[in-house]
Image (cartoon, rainbow, N blue to C red; front, side, top):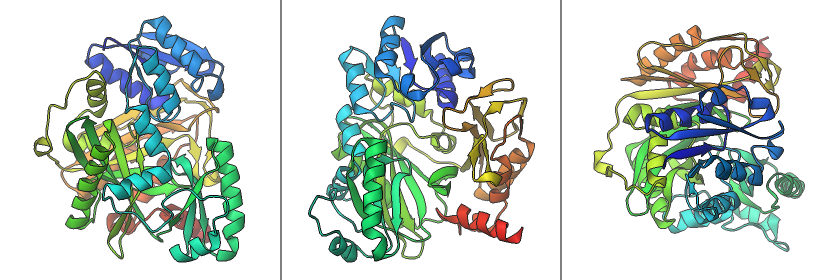
Amino acid sequence: MHKLLIANRGEIAVRIIRTAREMGIVTVAVVSEADKTSYAADLADEVIIVGPAPAGLSYLNHAAVLRAALDSGADAVHPGYGFLSENAEFARKVIAAGLTWVGPSPESIELMGDKSRARRAAIDAGVPTLPGTETALQAGDDIDAIAAKIGFPLVVKASAGGGGRGIRLVEDPAQLRGTVDIAQAEALAAFHSSDVYFEKFVTRARHVEVQILGDGSTYLHLGDRDCSMQRRQQKILEEAPAPGLPDDVRERMRDSSVELARKANYVGVGTVEFLYDPISHEVAFIEMNTRIQVEHTITEAITGMDLVREQLRIAAGEKLSITQEDVSFYGHALEFRINAEDPDNNFMPSPGTIKTMNLPGGAGVRSDFGFIAGKTVAPFYDSLLGKIIVWAPTRELAIARAARALEEARIDGVKSTIGLLSSLVALPDFAHVNHHTKYIESFLDSMGDAG
């Protein structure tokens, strides 16, 4: 691998460029018209404009991105996360053009991208799952009887969904039929498939996940993470390892995740996601993400590994240089997603030009950002500016270090989530691991009531 085209933007594009440069790989950044002066464009060796600002005409334009790769002489394509990263059709086009696809096979992407099929594969691999339908709902199914057997509350989930999207909660049987109709229409519009399935909903659940690696013959895990602090089912604060898990639950998650990767013949970096019920201590499969995760940095912090480097090495045909016994974990890490959003206004995006950006430093602090002062946050894309990652030998010290780091951080010109994250990390419920996936909503509601 000598020349890498990065089919993405923002923080993850910068992240990939940095590792590629360390490996002596030339980088090509594809950008929209809105991103032609972006930080990623500044850092890349070459820049190619692939279309106007709307993502559908640029970053999601298969023909334009593939043409850029071929015209630039790139021999590999890294899709990052989001956009085309889990698009099996695009992966096939890259491979058919004689280029290296940095990711799992199109077949693995399709298998895990269809959530009902992924659920079936997880069951076959012995991965614990929630009660629910094993396949997508079919015309003529008695959905009332199926739902009654599963029990309420339950969720209607888009088979082609992912990343917290395509999910509808049903708490009352009277809401079921209307919710299914809405969910199917939304799924068709968002994912071009109206397939949905049912799954039991766990109240006050925690969201935990396992990082896996595979090269086609060797499979291993790099530990687990907790991603329970979410707003609108989108993660904003993650930590590794997941705190407060019983040892048997942790080992079952890790071992079954590796087995799922093995049975799926998975090649590359992936993440198996679970719901954990802290009352019953049961854990159940949600989905598998066939790409690098935003929160991969905290796994890097506790293992000392560079996951993007591992992606590139595996894609280039190299075998894993380590076994499970070689993987060691040390300390605790937290990641804070800094979004250009206004938490006081229902997390409305806050585009604009960044006037000043002061990022924290010091022992155990890392800042991965796709922007610097003077750059403009466009209104067309995801609002993630970057991430602040902290590491310390213990969770208690990591929390204290995080509070200090967030206090140092300052971004002017756009609204950001820094203040909210400072409030969350200071909460006794967070320190005592009493938070869950709906915690932020209840916290914000209580703050509103207090005001």
